[in-house]
Length: 220
Length: 220
DNA sequence: CAACACTTTTTACTATCAGTCAAAGCTGCA
DNA sequence: TGCAGCTTTGACTGATAGTAAAAAGTGTTG
Image (cartoon, rainbow over all chains, first blue to last red; front, side, top):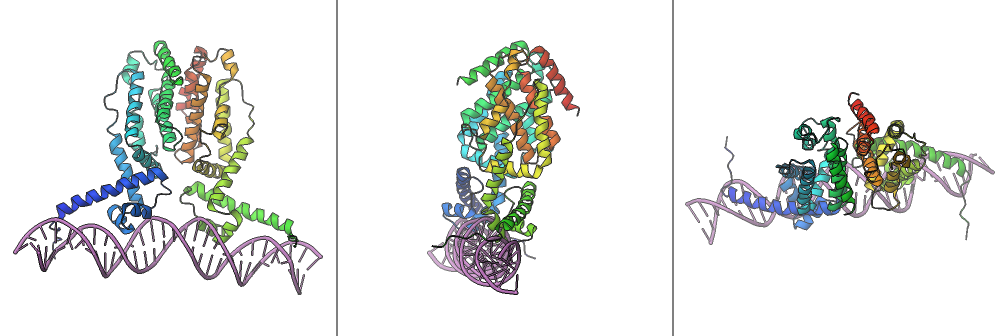
């Protein structure tokens, strides 16, 4: 029985492979973002990358593996968002969506491709306990301080508020990924949705501020 | 020059053809609803229908024509909706969603397949003025009476309320079509969303009633 | 710098998909 | 029953994902 032996130049080879892989992966992102998942073909990717199709399969596995990889990159990046949000609900909402928009703006192609892929593989299935959906939803939960300080009246279940806030973001994102709205409209739509949800259980003071914010959005 | 001559038995033939077509079209709906547009193949449809693929093409044209037909059927059905909704906002919301659920329940396969197809061909693009989206959105507009009678305070633009109400329905429908939620959950989710939007601009009396309704939903 | 050992790419292939065409088969009526 | 025209089918094309094994390439070491 022979031990399997690593190639002598394995470290260098792996590094090179990673570079090649990265170069092709970026082309894949661009193609998926530009044409959608349906019209993204391995053969076109191979052509654009100047290699043949088996090379793509060698580097990435199946087509669905490319999609999976996009998705896992997405999850990684999304976990870096929204770490130190402001205390005020209105500022909090703005902080959240501004962060999201900034991230999307930087790598729009990638995010649109990744979200398309994610929907396709049902990554955001809300029925999975502890799945991505559940965790993302938690981020939308109203803070305890908002109830303690009387900003929120507490007549509506916090979990209900959370779901509705998350839904505002979710639909906005779907519309953006579908190409129906741009990032400005995304920001507008998500903020409007969040403010309206907050307004449904806000103290008179907060309610007045929210109304002002909502009406201010329209004029933009 | 010969006149093209209709077959002698043309009337009977056309009637039979319509029956065959309908039978296969129903199988197509079932397959699309069950597996999604991506995994719906002409060959499987042919196999399920007990014919060969050219027959499918003869009866329906291209695969995209089947999708188009689903979409045009959907448009037709949606135009037939002539509602006579109750005056009270809460009853109005329930009336709306109960109607929707009843319709979806009756022909679930068709509606899921048709909505998938509609998304695919961007039928619901909100940017098209006077498109389906815009017209559907109008149905969600709050009534003038609600402002005149003081049920709604009028601090938030009616058009804003309309958009948010419509969005509640829209996301619920997307989740149902995607298979994430069933019709009961759809009803729950859409009502919760509509009530929360209403609550953001409701008079104290209406607000109290809405809170009760929202909290009543949870226990179901 | 040449030879080796292993990696990487490619050539050539299979299977499945949508879609086409002309020939064979069938149907409804006289 | 015979036939005109409709309907289905066998046999095909071209595009797609994916695979196996031969060919080409690469980093290291003597």
